[in-house]
Length: 510
Image (cartoon, rainbow, N blue to C red):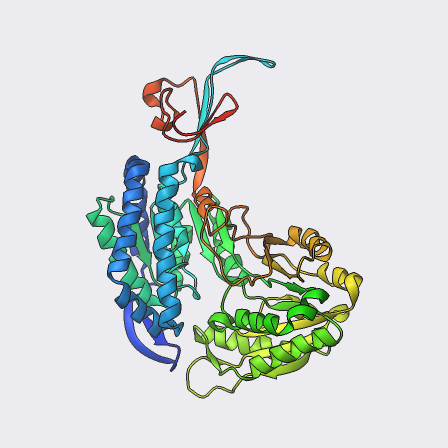
């Protein structure tokens, strides 16, 4: 039974730990029902706007965000302490995502349109069959703590769902409720001006509101970015529904990095700078943060670790997003440092303020004696260096790696043999293989994939890049259908998108 007590939603400054304002009231069960019912009613009209209409809507949302850039960045910085530079970049990415999905709609290949005309086949007569993807229905999106824009109210889940033709109800993250509320109001106003049906966008605050949202029969799919524990809790709600629905979760990732002996010999200092910059970027609160680096034993590896230690020792304490993340970081990083086989190498400065600060840490262990705790994600500015002896020792250690969003290989100049062996070993455990770079940059593009085997994600379809739209679509086939009842994209004379006709892929215009 839902708790009928209505509570205020507080916005907290992580730099001080103080409550700044009460943004809204937690959304009641009745209000969640109203929002979901409105989303369900909006779904047919949003689909009927067609690809061009939804592309125009997405561009209108992008323009509206740009028009309020300064306000959005200021509120987001106050709530997250991520800094204006980072947040301006994130807002630019968010606008780009919206516009990219407008291009996806106009290109049309995402529909996977296929036409098989009636005729004789080796199996016998075949009816006329036409197939394409259609919207799945209203989608619930759970915003992420660490990306208040790109993975939150206006983020990639929302953009891809709207592109698919699905209304969206977002569960605002408690780390940035004021940002969520502001951005929602900007988007809702822009959607209304663009002619989107009422109910295209909705916003829910509060834990109970999120649970009610997951359970509501109007919701047909869920996009979530967060912890494994949070994901499992939501899956339990889904499993209790009379009609279980798809859950697309991005959950946990260790993101191992392998430094080859040749790379360590050629550029130890550069690699040290890159690794430390990557695992402390955004205070180590990236899902692609490299949490474990394999570095060769010997003098070259020693030089690399020493350079990393020097860089970490110069770092100030870093502000984390909320009290819960700060407490978890202190507990998990402390447990890591106390492992029998783990040795502390360096630490940054102690906290100086009253906010949710964390001390950057560098730890080391032997790859041959890798504790289980080292292979689990620790959200925050900590990394473990595992020293390995030879290719056999490295290979044995890599067999213990959990699945991740990314796996990285730092090679020597022209080196191919060991990187190829590592790639083949890690490909089954990672969604993206990175070479001679660091995984904490995720480009939004047609070729991007941001997923991986469990526990990094539980979906074959990515949450970043154009194939994110595939999560919120389902296939429908029309058999012997008259032209008048077919979607435009499946009619005989239509050439506006790529289509597969009788097994042959035809480009748009053909």
